[in-house]
Length: 560
Image 1 (cartoon, rainbow, N blue to C red):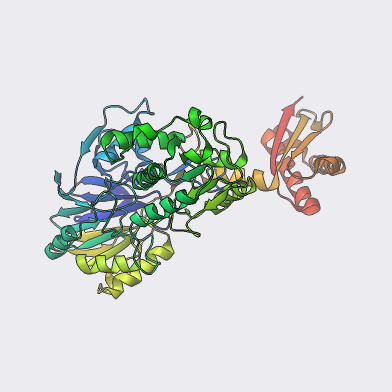
Image 2 (image 1 turned 45 degrees about the horizontal axis):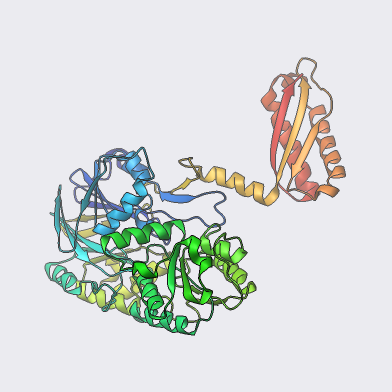
């Protein structure tokens, strides 16, 4: 990127779209639009770490490029954490922005912000489908879409330079549980008016066919419950209100009491019930502490942990460590969710633990207990033919998903040169109805670990090295005036070699340090940092040549 672009900001005389997350991965969704000195953001999501992200709790977009911009608003498409989870961190850096979202989305946002004492007086503005928001140079039209959470929406963002449609996550379920399907008529009207740039969900673009209706899940769960003889546990995303509604309806039909388990499940279902998105028969609801008082064949537990999260309710059940719910022989566990890439090992660990305890586990691979919230290939082709965009940038997905989306966009009539596959950090410019590629900007990942705002990739490399090769601590005492060692060198290793076999290895390593320092010029003994470097060099060479390992070496040099 040129120095001019670094100093000149993102305003290029049209509408600059900057992709800060969600392109090349499933999660961490974030895009910024800049026009006439005014920047708005669509979604501010998180990415949940894989096992390789040692100790990291959350991964957020790096929005440092926006620090010099006039950021005035955030438009949220729906209430999933991969679209709203990073908002508290963003509001710390941009406290004066207006946050737009639908009713349930803002309710979930408020629940998150309640846990942040330092974030107050946030300007939250509720919007609804068909609303038109005038915000600076932008006219933002809210479009109803169906997803795996209620109150999802897309945005048609119009400026003097043209119209950009951002779909958010969506599918074309024409018989959804809430009877609010994706508003194809609204999208058709936008297409008739002219859509210059389409930013569209790519998550399922590689899968042929159409996404089945959510109602198929309810029928399958009801059939499973009718045949179940013991306790039933249903694990789902805590935000999947429509899925939970079907579970509750099925439980009532077969005469089972229901119980919500898991902090996020309890919190989200209370919010959904209060706002009227979830209808609960209070006579059928029991508290967690009451589960053991009822016969197992009269109870269904609705739980978190469908992704094998280590301390989730389902993972504790699988390990036999849950204090209130015990899963055993003859019980049924239904995983009513998708498998997020990267979570396979954790999910299979939970399934194996449950099976070991005698439970029967039903998941998407065995029965229709989950349907996706994302449009598949044939859905997207229909959608493209309705919207007829001039330019397309596939978003929200791994590169294989976005590449598949590019192919179907071309197949549906968009010229190949007008379908742009981008990455995080790319920018595109819409100016007078024409879209061109812009310069790249910094757009990395920010690793959140507890209260640490960003542990950074260097710390992760150190953690990975500690995990893979262990650590060696060497304590060396020197007389800087006489230029010699004082006393014995103390050496400890952890995770490098088996403890019972380490004695002779440590003796040889100490000998290597002694020999290295013995050859050091007298004038360098006054430089403690030089002594440290010699210790690292001696140990690094020894461990590599004699043990075949590269442990993390911590030299401690003391002056006598």
